[in-house]
Image (cartoon, rainbow, N blue to C red; front, top):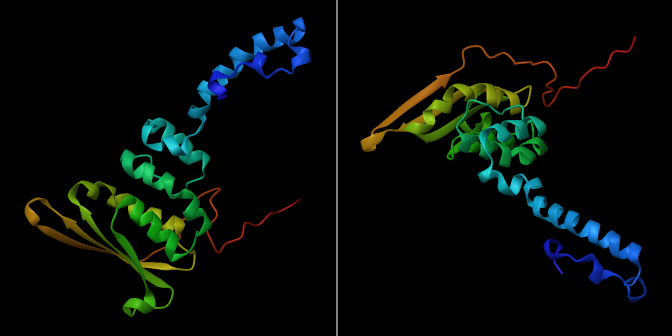
Length: 199
């Protein structure tokens, strides 16, 4: 018997099937259980992520504490950021977290650490090959990376190769002259410990 087709009278033991109180309870509860079974799939948000409207995505991102979420991003980017949220939270402050977020925004992105390209210690750079339509997400990329990276690490460059129509390629290197950590109220960065002051 499935919950959508439940009939509580059929589940009663033999000695209770003639009891008027038990029959009345079953008659009252059966429609409620069927209604609950019909509404239950709506409670599953993550499996139905592709069906959810954008306003629900914004609420879900706030509920999951996705600090790197940008409400102005396209709907597909929002969905990708929500899908990877648990993985990024688990690896916050690592190159894996930065790469996961980068790949959520641009499907093709990678992180290179300082020893892979001959940079200074604790520095890294990111590279991404993107389509022209994805270029609108570029302004939000640096603050997003600053949120998920380790607090001691420094972003050297954002190397972006934009594939334009007709096979034309546009290369851009967004270099950081001076990088300062971005601190927001209520947001804790990996590698930092919130201090509690008691009076």
